[in-house]
Image 1 (cartoon, one colour):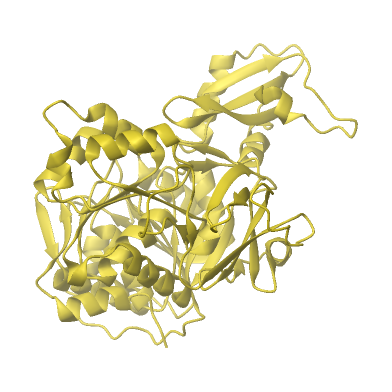
Image 2 (cartoon, one colour):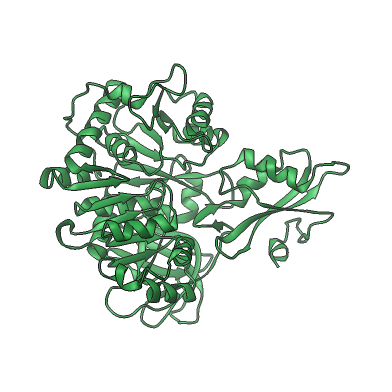
Length: 517
């Protein structure tokens, strides 16, 4: 038997009074977080949630995220974390596709009305029976008439609970990802996938017995923040300092004031930190406590890596993985110097190789380029309810990633390109096919190709090249505004270009490479 919630339970049992979470002026011990998670578990069981039931969660980086997340696991449920920027249409899709039977949704703000969008999405999912609103103030009434707040539902509940006896191979989390071939797909990760990934990551970067402080500015709904920070920190009973939203100046202040030892981010976050680093913030101030700076989500430019090392006085360790790999699969070895541009070597328990389109391993040549294939404990069970999509990427335990790389003579991997057309905007994946399908519903759009274009700080920006419907008067600005209403903030095209013709292949496919030039 194995349950991912053991990471929290062991920390609470062995270090009940140690600080688990710090958010602003509020501080919570492991005993307090575990007790609240037990209340959530008791609530779910009372409402009929059974082992294997899917429960969705839309929540920013607040204490409620780990409380609800581990509470779902304790009840035997499967967590379906959702991006907090999703709109009602997208939420409804995820709830239906995952077969979620319950949904926890944060209240949000005026600028990000999560509860309003969540309620509308919930109403589109007939199989989802329970909706709970997570309010900022536990004593506040529900912002949605007739919908129970989580605080109201937990009032007076027992703080003790015996966690469900799940098996190591049972699904623990469904993380939504996608490719260029359609709608987002749910990667089913088991309790063993995530526990082993967290424990392996702990071996790589953790200090003895929780003597560390992790600054978590990555969104917890993302695999990077969940495993490499939350689970890894809880596995060693470390302290997690949560940032509800990344702000570079505030991040630097927290690093200093909270004696942060571990920071993880995507390259754009490191770029922002450099911009916020003033003359008074000498590198030695951070070098006194900061031990690890981890980068992932996208390749870090070599020049930026060197600047971070010089200005913050800390070595940056690059890693590689995907939602389908829990996510960590490859990491910079601690022994020896960094190899600029490399994602490192496979972590403990993981094999990697380079293959061609037919799954054949390519020749062992440092100049040869192939698609990365991964095998080992992090590999997902498959895509939820998608046998064909699963069969396309899994064979004999090997998972093909869609990313192209080369491997040097010492076994270090270097990402060369992405076989997929996924756009990485500020560390978030944007999937062109999804954007194109929705844009095609607008009367002004006759045909569209969505591509990524270079951006100085975000890495890539989303651009829609549109073949316009004859006689339509919609402007480019109006189409951008319409897209803003349809998609999460990181997805909608900020750039729209109208053309009278799109370059095509002989078989009628749009030549996106020509559009990107």
